[in-house]
Amino acid sequence: ETGVTQSPTHLIKTRGQQVTLRCSSQSGHNTVSWYQQALGQGPQFIFQYYREEENGRGNFPPRFSGLQFPNYSSELNVNALELDDSALYLCATGPGEEYTIYFGEGSWLTVV
Amino acid sequence: SQQGEEDPQALSIQEGENATMNCSYKTSINNLQWYRQNSGRGLVHLILIRSNEREKHSGRLRVTLDTSKKSSSLLITASRAADTASYFCATTSGTYKYIFGTGTRLKVLA
Image (cartoon, rainbow over all chains, first blue to last red; front, side, top):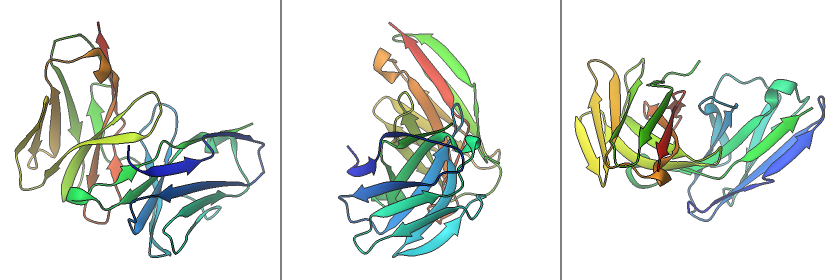
């Protein structure tokens, strides 16, 4: 049990729509990262937030955006959804012991 | 593109046998971690090894790191059916941005 909660767990959207995914942590960790994991692949880093500011970004277009709130919870927003956005979206908070990060169970997004 | 590559991509063994999976990476690192993922759920942290360490143990897990070859291996001894999962290595150069490999899918047969 990592104490990281993500919602929703599953959702289906239509191409062109927008989606918001949410992440909260009981740990009080001040850094949150989002990862995209396509089926059969490893997670890919989207971006990271530290104290409500974006603090690093992977190779994802601007239609992927995020927010971190004062309580360190976070949102991932994706605009103009494409079929290739179908994936498991993972939130991770940290750092914990030995600089580890802790993952939530993820949100499965299907774009049709 | 993903930095790490795991080998083999899939591994099937009998319960009680040892499972070894390897990871290669491309750039210098601060540490390397191994994670387990059950059936597309969240990742569970298993073990971390720092760049100045060569070997580390945790229960039935043994991790080695060879920074000259930019490679690491994870050994699971006396495997159990519950070890069936995908295993990923992840590296970081100190920013908490983790670069994951493509994973090894381990199946332990009872």
